[in-house]
Length: 302
Image (cartoon, rainbow, N blue to C red; front, side, top):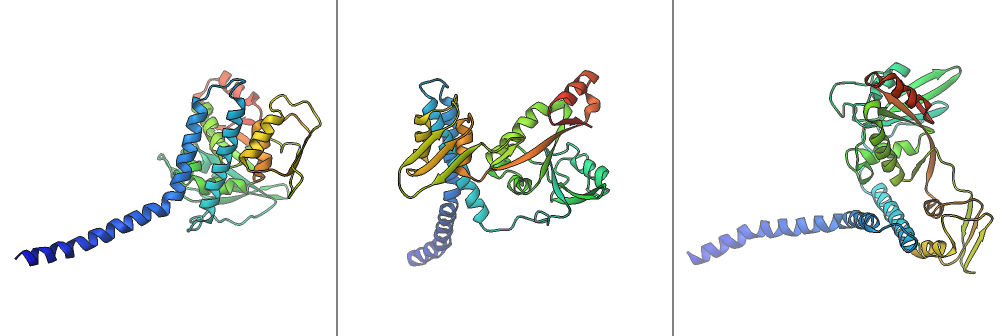
């Protein structure tokens, strides 16, 4: 009887042991990605804790460089991982220009696409109606402009929530972004969307910094400025270069740049794109509020 019980214990324990090993291996397999996300959260928390003053500016500059490095590393891992972009996301370029509609769920992107192009994009009273990228074409004079209706993105899209990464990848290939906003809650939404896009390397309505940067094999750091810098100095530049383990380079700064601008130049993978802010559902606003929206730069109430 005892031998039978032992055999039963051994036989029933084997699958459990194997399941545990598989779970451990699975966790280890995802460990790299989770590790980077945890490090990003740690750096963000440290930046939030650190008071901004003259004594901490160099430390904050180095933290910004570390954060940019981790985000680039996370994007590289995701783009080289298994799995395609998903149904409807690998839409070929067509016509003379590509415009991407981006915004939170249920702000009217699909209705706008249908009105402008005549393409049927499902619209309904519930969120996440559009689950893939739906293309349409605007015929203006003799030009053909491709308009892409993308699924709504949510806060945390840059870390992979919803289908955020696929949406942002399409935005990087666009010549213009139409950020569709709900006029009744536009301020918070605009800031969140801009933050998500910027954390993935998109720069909205900005010009590339006028900086020449070239890596070298020897000769140390050659640092030259042609204007007076008010946001950073040579010590800050050296701290950021040290964070990137850059010991030999040529750096020529032709305009008054910030720490973020310098990090963008070193990263070298930023995409500078024009963005038009389209405010929908203005019928819930007063005439004065609609007038204020219309006066904002790159903004259109519809």
